[in-house]
Amino acid sequence: MSIDQADMLQGVSAADAARLTALGSRAHIPSGAPLFELGAEARDVYLIERGRISLTLPMRIGARQEDVMVEERTAGQTVGWSGLIPPHRFTLKASAQLDTDVIVLPRAPLLEFFEANPAIGYVVTRNLASIVGQRLQVFQAMWLREMQRFVETRSS
Amino acid sequence: MVMFLMVLCMSVFGLAICGLAFGAATRGLPTGEEAPSTAAVDERLAAVPERFFVRDAAPQPAPAARLIPKVPIEVFLAQIERHIRLEQAAAESFLSAPSLESLHGRTVSPLVH
Image 1 (spheres, helix red, strand yellow):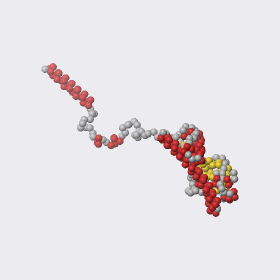
Image 2: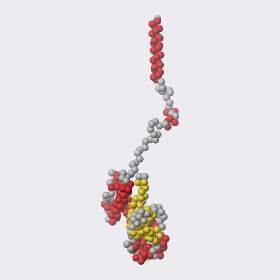
Image 3: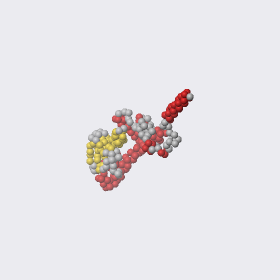
Image 4: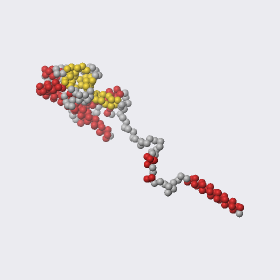
């Protein structure tokens, strides 16, 4: 996968995508290792180059607390967009399901780049809105399905 | 005369025995004058639970049964993850073609049946 095909960089030219990703650094996350923790300060956005990241939420099961996977992200997808959206706190825990390589894009140089290149900033921001909106819509539908079951259980 | 005195003595003796027996039988029963009023009951005594051999606290309703998995925790976690995947797929299916049917379509997840 070339980096300009990443979901956050759809519509950005390969040259501009290369300039943008040059702002960051590459990191390797071994299988099972965390990328970020729930509630931690979000300073970076991550583009997955290779591997798979699971996003989990803690759930109490009996007397135990377990991380339950709520989403998976694979190569070409973005995780950690809380790094660009206030209050800059991660609302999920992310960890590598496989050996994973990511491009770490720090917020401050990214925002400076967008100010200097507003056309690219606009495209990337639109892509980001699409990623955030997709999660919102999926979870909204999941919540409504759950509520429907609750109503059926209570009314039966 | 002797017989009269003998009958009299026996009658008095019998009367005394009956009186003693009656007194023993009715001892401890409150009379109308002796019965204490409700207001006069010692508050400390009132606080003592009537049910001596059971706990003071009134019986509480059984707490709602917690969802405790009957299968090993790893299996249960796998079921939850599968359920979430199926629900996400159903939600994405709804988003691609929004309708009431696709929103509330059933999945094969065992956690909702």
